[in-house]
View 1 (cartoon, rainbow, N blue to C red):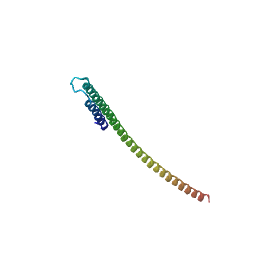
View 2: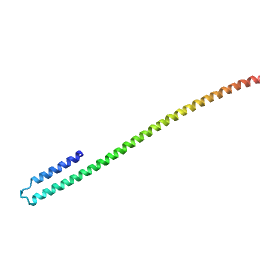
View 3: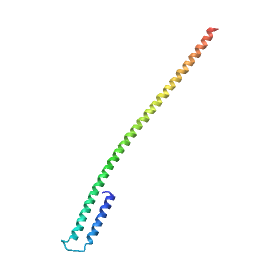
View 4: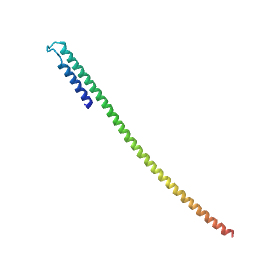
Amino acid sequence: MHESCKKSVTQEQQKSTCCSSRTGSSTPGSTKETEPLSKVLNNLNEAASFDRKCNDKISALLATQQELQDQIIHLEHREQEGAELLRQADNMWTSMEECYKKKLKESQDRQQELMKQRQKVAK
């Protein structure tokens, strides 16, 4: 049972015990004795109802906590997948850039070679 629920039940029981000990009559059939007894029963019913409500709320909170933990795990997994995709894209970009630089260098070298050949032919 949740700690605040226990405190509430204990307080209710103390109140009912306190009220039942204040009865002035000790005759078994008097209304003063049955009145505190009905209050005690009512307080016990209220405490039991409160306990059920507490348990329901705790169950709902635990279910929500589990859902949130599942969502966190799912989002962390997606984050890892996204980071991996970014690494792959970065590697691909770097590779394409290196290929482009290599092709550009080859083209410039070829252009210089052709320019030299043209100058030889023009002389």
